[in-house]
Amino acid sequence: MVAKGKEKSVFFCQECGYESAKWLGKCPGCGNWNTFVEETVSKQKNETVRLLPSSEPISLEHISHDDLLRIDTGIEEFNRVLGGGMVPGALMLLAGDPGIGKSTLTMQLAGTIHLDGTILYVSGEESSQQLKMRAQRLSVKNSQLFILTENNLSVIEKQIQKLKPKLLILDSIQTVYMPEISSAPGSVSQLRECTGRILQWAKGLEISIVVVGHVTKDGSVAGPRVLEHMVDTVLFFEGERHNHFRILRALKNRFGSTNEIGVFEMQEHGLQEISNPSEIFLSERPQGSVGSVVVPCMEGSRPVLVELQALVAASPYGQPRRMTNGADFNRTAMLLAVLEKKMRLPLGNQDIFLNVVGGLKIDEPAIDLGIIVALVSSMQNRQIKDDVIILGEVGLTGEVRTISFLEKRLIEAEKMGFQTAIVPKGNLKREQQYPLNVQGVRNVSEALQLILGGA
Ligand code: TYD
Ligand code: MG
Image 1 (cartoon, helix red, strand yellow):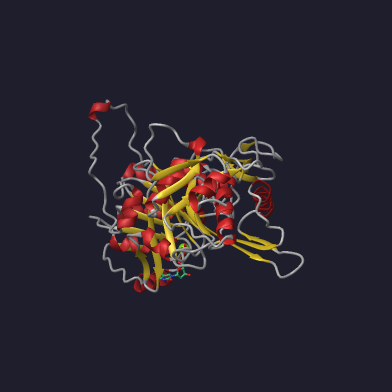
Image 2: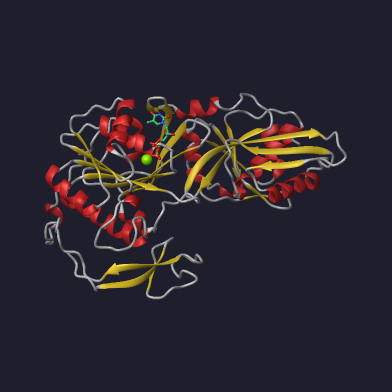
């Protein structure tokens, strides 16, 4: 036990984990305002249990590694995202919005994983009855699966030493605490210390560990960025509230690439794998439609394909209506002005509606060209091919400007079954191989010529 009176008070930025002895208005670490919260931390390091063997330098040649040693999770889509299966001793963070299906996914994982050893499922959020009910609903039967409902990390540690599991699932990191630290579960110091301890379990005892984490409103993992730095793999589980599709993707992966995605559908009896996602996503779109384009957008550092729809129709009223849903209103007004002035399209007497399908909100300029093409397609009732994606920022003179992360977006589009990409000419490099048929355009007029045969 740690002696009392050895505690000091420290201020932590709740965004990035920056530590300061004084309260600060602006965080020098991440630049955010009003993010500092006072927490008490123990000065004395907790030495109760040493899990890692005392370290000695080892010659690189003598370190054994087995490349093929991957655990089959029994879920193909999960394996793919992890880079071919789970690595023993890996610490994985599974993050996502509340209710998206993290607990469902981890429970299914506990049922399907091909593991020679026990699995410990620790829940700090639900009772064992609730977990049993979910397991029944998902038809999870595994005599090697043990359930522990506990929030105290020291108690969990004792159980781990007793049970010696090969896989540990911890739902969630925000609900566990170390009793030596007096701040509340979910605070920066708790998250940091708990993750540090869990990391020791993973590496010292060679347990694969999946830790569930909640995300904040802006979509980042709640708590300091250090959490993401400490773990081997950061997985995001995401989807829209109104549809049943769920996407699992790796934001960081020390054992594989971060380009792979896993697609699931939430059904009555759990998550069903979707092995051909492009088909599903395309089937959501009306075929041969007018006024609809697909644009790969970046959500943080992740590409997401979104459908933009435009409806342009002669206004029966004196004052034509303009409405955008999911796209920036002022930006759209600017693009309309470009169309009027540069392409001489009479839009002044038209009602204009623009919608980003699925309730997403996109605020990056890379969708400009997509918006323009959708608008002209609708206005002139001209079809856009179904397998085309459109990318580019549009400037006031109608020029198409370069965008960031072209490769990532193209890879995502290719994965979703698209064949052709209309992109800014400035983005294209000679000699470079692209995953799909890429055509560069310099201005709006060239783009419209290419896609619709002119404005
Ligand atoms: P859950 O895994 O509890 O989400 P999280 O842990 O991310 O908060 O799943 C929540 C939703 O999933 C819940 O609204 C019910 C739905 N669900 C199904 O549709 N089918 C199922 O088989 C299960 C277990 C859940
Ligand atoms: Mg849950």
